[in-house]
Length: 223
Image 1 (cartoon, rainbow, N blue to C red):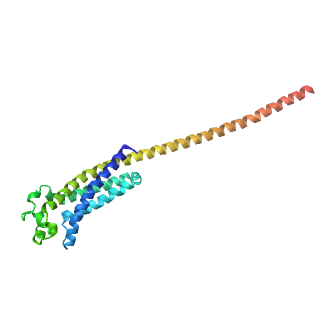
Image 2 (cartoon, one colour):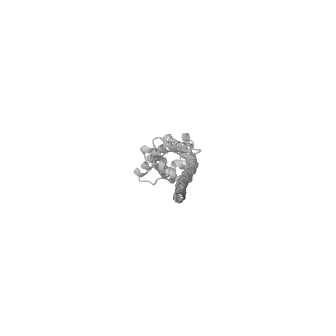
Image 3 (cartoon, helix red, strand yellow):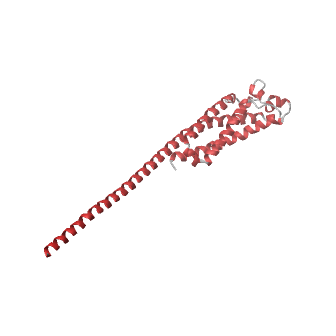
């Protein structure tokens, strides 16, 4: 296995390990909104869908690496698409970047108000999801940070997939050249064998004619 393939597998494992916590934490938020019969905000839902799809893609290409190696260009394009998707998802959650979890649970914070059962309205309704505001803020900030990390990871696997594609293309070309060379050498060997055989057959009648000529001379001498 080439060095690019080894790094590709290692980065894929890193993607899976960092996407699983994102999927788990955002599943907790999605379940809370569904259980409360409320719509999940876009800044949670977009990152959740992107993380689920990215994790499934990473697992599929890691398990089927031998097959993915033959279609490295396609894998690279899909990884680049996930880079763009994760950038959009993280941008939706950009409000958590500078948020302070110590002062998160205030009415003046629009994110706290928009969190439904996990935020202001959940606290007013004594929802168990709004019992620990610092935990809610910490989970969202962790998802935001891991989302940025996966943007970098998927960009690197995009470059590594291109490298694997180029290496596989060079190997295929080298194998094709070896096959053509081997075929040409076998063809030339058969041709040289036929040429030697034809030369031997062409020499045999002349030697036979010389023997007949010598025998006729001997008969004339005895007469």
